[in-house]
Image 1 (cartoon, helix red, strand yellow):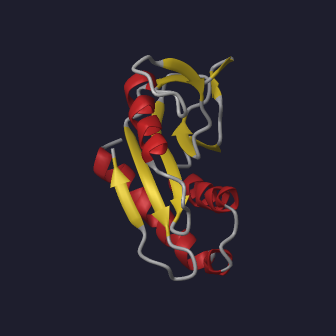
Image 2 (cartoon, rainbow, N blue to C red; image 1 turned 120 degrees about the horizontal axis):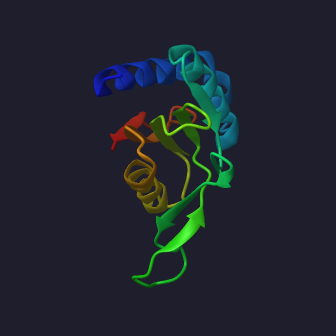
Length: 148
């Protein structure tokens, strides 16, 4: 699947979320609930793939990436278990298509670690495309797409 086709399908799923689930966005619901709804729409766009939220397995092993530790200032890398917000893949294979990390527009949490995870998913696990997505809550801002 070509990059532009993936982006088009993801954009379509995000558009569905913004329209069909406006009521939960207006009340600033939990990020996990939003990512679940988005995963449902992604599943409609990618029916031949598995779409999973917070999927922490790489075959039978816990999914780990070489990431800089969040709280330790060091140049050393450590293997960190990871739970991506949403992935599109074929379970129990090396076919990894897309990884998404998401934040609400109202979040005060720094996005650096999420973006670092996207780079690592692409580098270490072969995901074809990554996205850091900011979803607007209660009409607070625009949807922001940062593709990697």
